Length: 130
Image 1 (cartoon, rainbow, N blue to C red):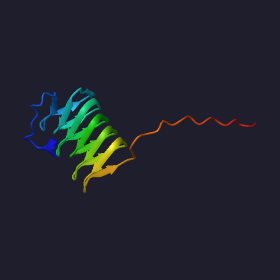
Image 2: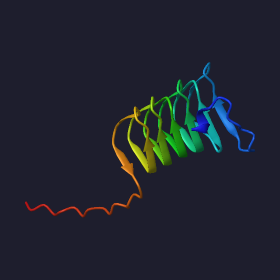
Image 3: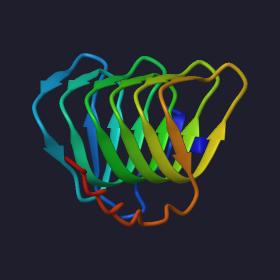
């Protein structure tokens, strides 16, 4: 996958934010463009276009993005249009995605809902007889 190459071309005009290997970030991160995590991010990631977790990267929090590529570790729930879990990666949390690909060696611990999710209609409460 080209996203994880260190020499990837980021000159396409899209804005990228990077949490480098030497960096530790704590708090909610709202990203309009793309985010690459090579260090440790402790908190939620909201509204991102792409989230790329490098092989040494770690996110401890929920991730919401159009596309998530995980090559490291995510400890939290993931909600994405497309989720790609690479061979050495692990996700501990629930997943909700329209599409998902897991390479051999990728690990997921949690519930997965893949595909279009139908809206659940509330079940009417049954009357109790005294």
